[in-house]
Image (cartoon, one colour):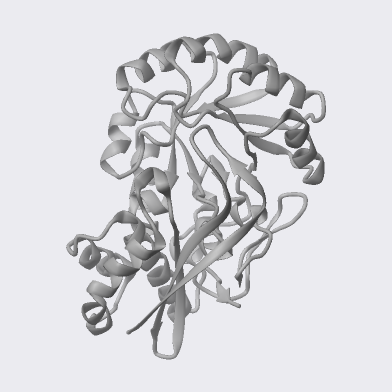
Length: 336
């Protein structure tokens, strides 16, 4: 099996700001796995919050390149089990796992959702993310991309006022993501005000390790609470069940589609709502997320929509939120 690695710097349409950082470009690693003249593609983006760079991921993968190329590939699950014993970060594992799933589907000549026995006739609509900026800029972004569901990034001194102003310009559903920036008191104060403004749920209002605070929030908030930074790997799902109403799974954080499938199953058994989110990936990563759509309650897969320039074809999202799945099998990715 041939392994290829390439770094891309993805330009964003607008400066993307959340409560802890801002950026105009997103560095991303694309992994290609080639077997029997068929190539599968995977992706993982850099992330300063988790101290991940493209260079660090490439170094990890290059260190085991000979083992990867000698590996007798059969299924993504067996490959993932092999990877977890190599001491890689989950981000590096994710890029390899996504490539393995795309490769496997292409070798089977079936899209992944079909291999998993799911039907794409019904699926949730992705939200479109509005990063922190001046109110004028946030309104401008909404007008530029009219959408039925917006995820609003917050974490300022005037969060409710921002949402109140944005509400004047759209009837869309709002979802709020504070990225760990609020306190318990702020969350409980803001929740009823935001509910009256058409907010559907709150995502990760408190710090990731504030479990006691989150348990109190869940019992007192008038809005559902979805875990993000508190739900990284499979073992976090059960703990989140006592502190949140649902979880947001990130493929890069958990290590790819293989563990994400198990996390979805576990969350549903616990009665949690399930969301899968993106990390401003290109169409490579977004196409992998899209294969999970029939299994989800919510999805945040607008990463490629936020880019000024994409690097691949695959799943496409129309202006009315309809997902167009490619005719190519696997995740359906073709790198340009």
